Image (cartoon, rainbow, N blue to C red; front, side):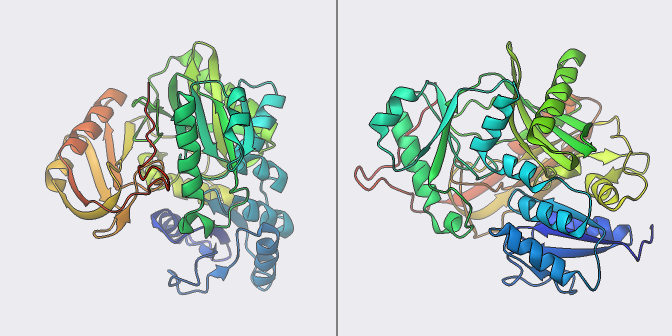
Length: 435
């Protein structure tokens, strides 16, 4: 263990979940003190019994002031934000504390899906036609501007929550209603996210999808991994499943992805720390879908290991945030992947079978069920959390993908029905079909 008793890392997290614990463990292994700042710590126990900072991410300037005041006696030496909601507060806190970080303006460019499209388009990057509108707008005035097929989405939610493809005016109207119902739900309203009355509609981009995990230093993008997403993400909803690295794409496409990531981060103004980027690739080139100044979410980071000591992504990012040696380690050459176990239907999780058989599948490294028994779970587009994660490591990208699919096929999830959101007039859930 490396001991750095004088180093303190500020970790901003919207909830105390498994990703937060992974970063806390990485800090503990390095012998550094991890200080948590969260807007939910007043509801949950402090996991380190050292006084988590209570802040409001919905008011980032106020949150930064609180962080500065509460760390004045014992300064922190680095800042990391997990998830999308804390990123603006983290950028403001880093600036106020004189620590490395992205400018708040750059992070704000990423927080709004509309603003990100505007910035990337102004920089000349390939983007779909798009426009924003209020969700209670007269659709008869909106529809003439829509080019089908299209994708409708909220301005600020993440993990593809509320993202719906529509191929016809009828499907568009159903998508707008359904997203509106989601944005009015107590769970979403309680986040106090900005612009919950605004939607974005954009032309659907066909093609295969990839993700890039990167690390920024002075505006230079260092590619940590490029993940293939072998399942077609064509809608009507966009719940992700499998990530596998290294990519099977040819070297020239690999270069084009990295070049697009560099141009997109520069346009947005991102210069420092982790970046997670999503792209679509088709005959017209590489299209940036979304970039976020944060690491990959959930437990997906466990698919990545670095250097001869097989360092975790969390440890690499902690080292980078604190200026400790070792953050330049390269990803191992072994193929690796993760399946985010999809939610087949909304309801209550009553049981799971087949875990032992699934774990015995060749190349499977671990299976973690994160959904708790008898908890309510939501399928996409209302949902944003998976049933769990399956991890595999093997000789090739194809072997890893096959192992993930085989392990998943051996699992059985028992989910009881629950009341569904119904349209106030028709009494039915709006139906949105894919072509």
